[in-house]
Image 1 (cartoon, rainbow, N blue to C red):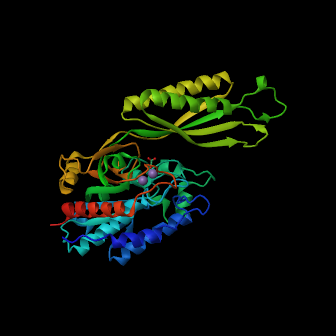
Image 2: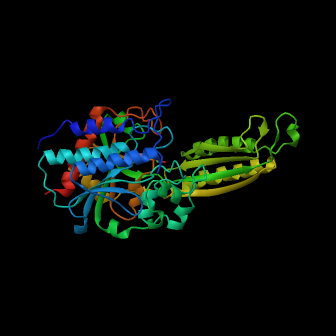
Image 3: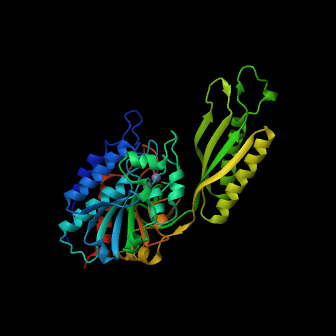
Length: 411
Ligand code: GLV
Ligand code: MN
Ligand code: MN
């Protein structure tokens, strides 16, 4: 077997790098169904057709590039997503897609002969940065989100998901579950940059995922009374910012107590005037824990605290759970197969790691066998322009993915 230096990886990486990078922050703004997302999607289609793969977009706007006939069934699928969080890093998502094409190139260089259909996929709207719900493309496909629910999703400018899809050239009335597609897939393997430092600490380039923590997003609406910042006595105010601020501190406290994480990372304020007491503070809580009981404890504790702070300030509070993903335990047989293919079995050359980050592979794990490979990230930073992975580690990821695809799909 010949092993390449990942040559096609570097070229594809360079092509994708400028798309959607903000000149001031250096971070990526690749939001679902935007023009930049369209540029990324055009890039995907070019890669597919340049390799003679059969390109298609499914009913939910996910892009597929097929080698072999999907109707044969038991397909091996790999890929990830190309969208980003606001000012995200270059790797979260694109590393899995670029590595998928590069792994196929590597296998062709090796003269591999496939006896299962193979597909590369780009799932739409994984991060949920625009409409608030993560993994929309895979959730719709798996039937975890209905068309009606998806049609109600609205971005910060009041644009609904169907209007955004339509503007990007897709039919929003076609969206919905896709069980026939899933029934043709025997395994989905997603390669992803690690979003933590476990591999850096263990000194390994590549790891295998074991599980994803249960996680969700909750919207907290604190409604008070707008008034003049200069003339309203402190005692007369119903300032929702105060109860919001106290709730942020409570979230930190509750998460610490439970060994979990809780983050208020997004906020909108009305009327958002420097000299006006706010009428509304809307904050979004993202919370994750190793198990469901801990997550319930954290979120329950934050809700209770928030209600008592709101009462104390004469502020109304509504809390809505906007999304939830239960704990994911990746398919043991597929995980063990990856470990066997990568030559580890139990000697931990390729460590098996849990993660607090959500992924399309997690959503699909309820429908089909899924697995993940992680590539070392020396700082562990993610969802930030500082996210990184060395070129050598990216190539090691491509080769590991090629080994896995060869082991699963080739004779
Ligand atoms: C997606 O990356 C998430 O974990 O929120
Ligand atoms: Mn992400
Ligand atoms: Mn991701």
